[in-house]
Image (tube, rainbow, N blue to C red):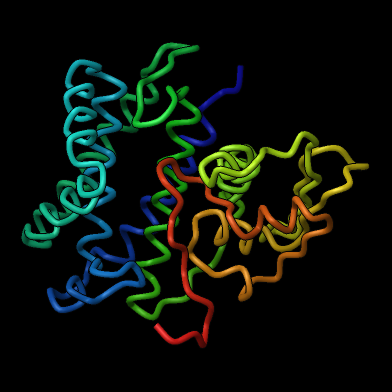
Length: 264
């Protein structure tokens, strides 16, 4: 069974990096629009705080989390935006403090979880490592939205390995959620890490292949960039189709981002 400690450590580092980005923002900067329609910088941090709170409940209080799921089922198209909206109304100092407290509580809960534990979620149940990976993925992706709003260039790190692996593992989910037949054969995925290391997944002799920078693959599977703006290459019809629909997050198919230069 995989030790969840490395991904929990990387989740902490990813959160601290984003914290440095927003800690000294002015009220006007908190109100800047991000690439997500209708979401400001405050909405992005509020969403992370809201999801961390839900994650803590999933890990520590299953009954309370079940009530949260009932709320989501009652308003499936609105509950995520409503959670972000509620948090974004708070004064920035309060929102920042709530996000910090929530992610600290989640880290403590994940580190204290018994070996082999599985937690309920809005999708399939998750292990400790899977929960931490999902939180890292969201923290990084929403952090990219914040950076875009602020005009900041973030330096990618090898923490992306967790997101890349999640992106590969969710291949079948992406086909299924789009109502497409799931390919029977595995793909070969070869990604160049920020450090220059080569990350590989799947059999070497697979007919369908995806290659390119790990950063671009992570931007694709979190739907933070359009495929046409990324240096990813697909060989084989199924792999090519996958790059059009890939998503590493739960829920219905996302709308994704427009290609650069497209008219909104």
